[in-house]
Length: 134
Image (cartoon, rainbow, N blue to C red; front, side, top):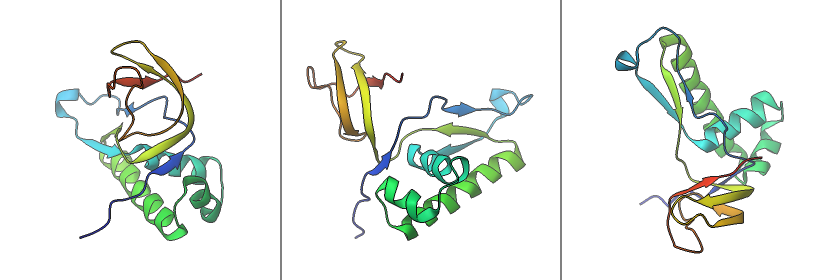
């Protein structure tokens, strides 16, 4: 049995999580799903122009793991662009360096590093919370 993947480090959550090709009705649209850590890999490597070794360090993964992440992500993006698919950003196994969170249930606010899969509100234990980006 394979071991579970470690949380990958991301600097921040993406501000936009859905991209749709113009002129294609939602009822006829297929999607490609990118995880938050896949978007972070593209940001570091393609937007920031960092070498893969430094990108891997920033995401707390090995260089071969980073290479697999970025190669798979680029293939998904190419598929969406060439075939007119929407891109949805959701899920993954990651932790954000530092962020401000607010619980949608009780309104409690807190700050810190977290792993998306395991974070609950310290006040009411709800998993229904949002990142309050500046």
